Length: 265
Image (cartoon, rainbow, N blue to C red):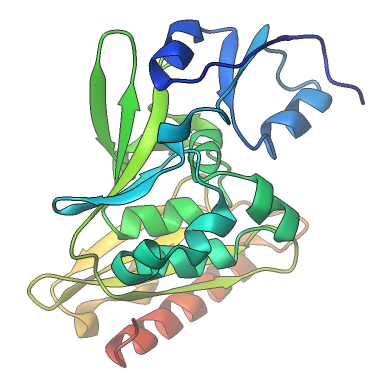
């Protein structure tokens, strides 16, 4: 289906972009999810704010105790960026597994996060890394923990007039492992397991339910996969039944914990 009519804005700074945003005028960068939704008639914005010319959204840099990743950086760039490889290796691993080559080249981390597709590789890992999302608007700037940003399928804490400008990963980032199971383009199960200070671990399950589920434990041995999986509410679909998804999820949580105990990076 053809795209519905809309006005295209092309600002060159984040402040210019923010001034254009409202309930009917929305930002876009890669457009991998947005344009598909528009063609299906699920979204009919009056205007689109093209973010590709805003250089500050493309930067990846260290800022004190945080790795700052511009929301306009593509999945492919993040997957191969030296700073990400050194300071957020788990995110680089997940980014290499996103979608397909076209999606990784065209799609951006900011677009992925704000679209809030439940079967997301990126959301699962950002929560595990205790990442923070930085948004700006006309009133000012605010930071939202990744764990509090995803409110449900295609629903986030971002307000209509806000623009996600960067993702901050606290340093040093924890070591960890990311595993996923999938039979189609998006994951059926996504599991991120990381170490936390004091010898504990954090496990995040994504893709199975409407929103990621996380659990933190004092040590790896005390992490109970069955207990954590019980908090997930999978929906039966063409990929599998609820019972099947629970079983596969528990298997992958156990594997992730075993790899973490073995010293995963």
